[in-house]
Image 1 (cartoon, one colour):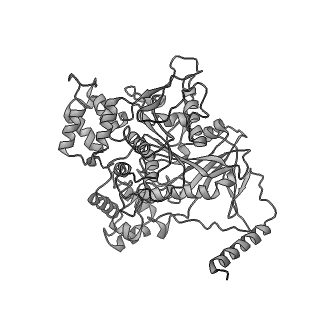
Image 2 (cartoon, helix red, strand yellow):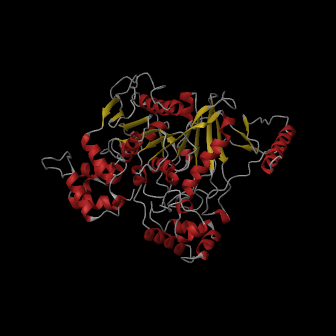
Amino acid sequence: MVSGNLILFLTIWLLQITSQAQRVTPVTSHLGPVIDLGYTALVGNSTSPAGIVNSSVTFFGGIIYAQPPLGDLRFRAPKRLDEDFSAHVTLLDARGWGGTCVQQPAVEGVGQEDCLNLNIWKPSDAKSGAKLPVVVYIHGGGFYFGSSPQFPMYDWVSQSGQIVAVSMNYRLNLFGFLDGAAVRADGTANAGLLDQRAAIEWVQRHITHFGGDPESITIAGESAVGAAVLLQATAYGGVKNPPFKRAIAQSIGLYSLPLPDEIEGVFNNVTSAASCPSNGTEALKCLRDAPLSTLIKSINNVKNNFLAPTIDGPDGFLPGLPSKLIAEGRFSQGLDLIAGHVTNDGQNFAGNPADLNSDADVIAAIVKRYRHMTNATLEKVLQIYPAPGLPNSPFATQYDRTWTIMQEIILACMDQHWVNATLARGGQKLYSYRFNVPNPVTRAANPYMGAMHASDVYFLFDGATGATPFFAPFNVTEAPISKEIISYWTSFTRTGNPSTFKTLFSPMWPTFKGTTRVVMSEDIGGNGSTTSSVVESVPVMESTRCVWWMSQNETRV
């Protein structure tokens, strides 16, 4: 006897075959190349972010990957599109960027709620089913600002010629990260992280049409989204298989995750600014009914970084502190991994050197970002990082001391924590790095800084700078650094090994065995034919401090 499930499967299969037979004429457009997804078709173009036409790369932008998160879907997990095959397909213009998400500080007319879209760059000659490796880049910005147009991936595809690249927008601040008892009763915490996951899953379902391999996806991101890459790997405590094979985590950065009373305090700030009830079912109904102009007031009534990922329960997306999940082995095993940071990441968060002159100034800078630290922990920090002038101090100034502390709390230590935990569990394709070249635009405005936070991003995206990016040209010795890091990243995307398709002048990048990492450095004064990159061992003092930081609950990271 044939089972009911088999009959249902055969019925659906026959309907799909019948529908597909009805569309015998391929979808075409005079506007550009077309990709037919079955439920819709997209027309793209071959223009780079700088407006340069290059037929080797084709771009498709503003592709919707989930239902608009409006009305009753506000503050809920993203809902999948109706992707059933249609005999009468709609051709959509995908030659430009889609709408970007509401930012913080929020301004009317800047950003929109209906922003769940992604962008794809493919080699123009890549055919459907070519099975090219795929990299999905998730933009940073503290989970409260930023957008995909700031991070164009044209160069990655143009330079490699053998990958498909994707970027996305996801809900930020209030729309992506509102939490509280009312949200958990009738909504979803960490909706922005679920948006990221939904976009990756859309890529899995459809990237074959663009020549990509759904079984060979790398996710990548920097700063807050270096953290998001980590959170995607620790999602659900690692018990569910992730929709990606590899991960690149750059300068993993989280502020202190909030305590339950702080979550409710943020929720109350949001509701009071919107003139909504502060609790119960009416609170969320009121927020869902409110116009965007009202919720802009709510966004601006909350401090930056307080609308960000939260621990949402034992069965939630984030069931515990990331540092503890990693230590406990509660993360996706078997991922190929690159994790590292920039030499002077902490300088962006230490404050002005002129304001750092005493132990009290150092403490004030720390608790401004990591507000849960106890007095006992802070006293220990001052001992581990001795003040300038003491015989055993490696610090020339209180500023050097402060930025090193700010950096090692998470930005320079979580990468070591993750690769070491993966190595201990049998991981093989693991790579660590330190990026040692400053962003020259930021350096010109802040001459006291070295290779500051996000310097690597500048070189990965053609010198892109600003919320509406302009593209600063590289000088003769900066250009090889850009080629080097893009080659490492795209080689890793292709093979799980950053050295397989590296530039000829770059050092071989050894797998991580507890200490080894690549240091990417500019050949200052050279002729542009090489870099000064080397392989180094992580200093023992740095490793020791990092092990201590990753054992501290008070940091809430």
